[in-house]
Amino acid sequence: MTIDQPYPRRWAMLPAILSASFMTLFDFNVVNVAAPSLQHDLHAGQAALQMVVGGYAFTYAAGMVIGGRLGDQVGHRRMFLIGITTFALASLLCGVAQSPGQLIAARLLQGLTGAMMVPQVLALITSVFPAPERPKAMSWFGVTLALGSVAGQILGGVLVQADLFGLGWRAIFLLNVPISVVAVLAAARLLPDHLSTDRRHRFDVLGAIGIATSLGLVLVPLILGREQGWPVWGFILMVLAVPAFGATLWWERRHAEPVLDLQLFRSRAFMAGLPANAAFMGYFGSYFLVLTLVWQEGLRLSALQAGLAFLPMGVVFALVSVLGRSAVARMGARAVTLGSLIVALGLIVMIVELHVLRADLTVAWLLPATAIIGLGSGLAFLALIGSVLANVEPTRAGAAAGVLTTTQQFASAAGVAILGSIFFANVGTSTSLAAYARSAERYSYLALVCVLASAVLATLIQRRQAVPQAQAEPASSGAK
Image (cartoon, rainbow, N blue to C red; front, top):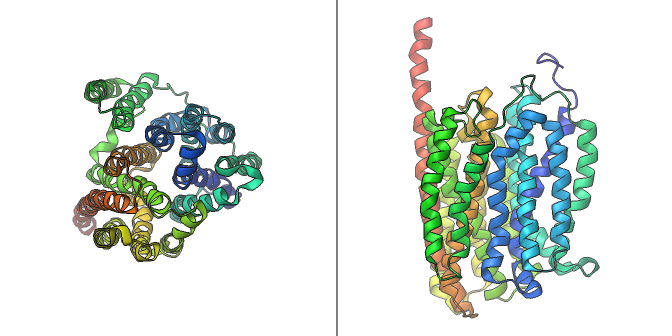
């Protein structure tokens, strides 16, 4: 197969590999709906609940760069098959867990195995699809991520409430097993077997360990600190993250094939894009958890009712993701700015409702605000990846995607840890609707700061992308 003869099964292959991306996002968000059931059935405390949600995101983020490099070394097809097979095994372990500790361990493994397969999705799309077809394939990648996020809320509630075969919350994990089996069979038949490089790669073991350690030194204290009274060891670990990351950067500059490609950070648009993604995902990762707890603990909705309460937001999110692909592609980073501002409007409406209504809060009052937030989130989420990777050199696209995805997932985990801790701290031991409404209001102020920061940073992406274009125009006119 050559560039003149693109891989003939590329469009048949796409659904098989996108199923992996869908499952990883679905599993990050589906736990939010099942959170109360996990607390009751496994007697999981708040720290354990945050580890179930945030721990998955941490290993997923920390393992992303490792998964990308292993794909380069042993082949993307082989690495995808290994990743999705082990992801199915980890999902099975989650589904049969008998204690919070077992579930946390299985979730950490699930996040790591997800990180083994998802980088291969971007690499396969980049390698297999010709340049004219690549934007369309990438847009379906964005749609898949968006739908996976929303489906986790809605389908998760249906599965928990349906109590299939008496499995309860376990069904949300066991569902991955048959889907993974079908995906493995399809991928084994459809994925090309030519994508490993001729040159042998030197895997940067110390760099991978350094990045994972640096992330862990920050995230673990954030997740566990509040319930343990913010012990001194937590602050010590967070301080140690600075020299650990500094030492990692020193090593990466000297390694022939570093895990973290530092050349990417010479792009001003890429440098602005990472914090824009981090700010938005910090809100996005925590919002579903907080709203689910308001639905189920504050308003006493069942898991099914909570899932259905997400429906207006989910429908708007999905419609924007599917129907707005071409518009978002034209707008670029402006879609991130516009979407973030729409989310900010929805959060302001929610803040007013929570402040005024308190104990009189109802689902009906919150639905319009969540629909507005869904509209803005769908618009921004779809553009977050493309706007940052637009000016990256094709030879660095895989490394850039790995760094970007790691940033997004770590920001999601940090959002759950930091904003979730603030929410839980404000609720305290109270079980009243007024307490949950008050805590959600204070959380919404912080989420508002995140999305406004994302909007501002996205404008910087636009300006910095415009600079090379403006510099190129005189050269083009001079050539004429």
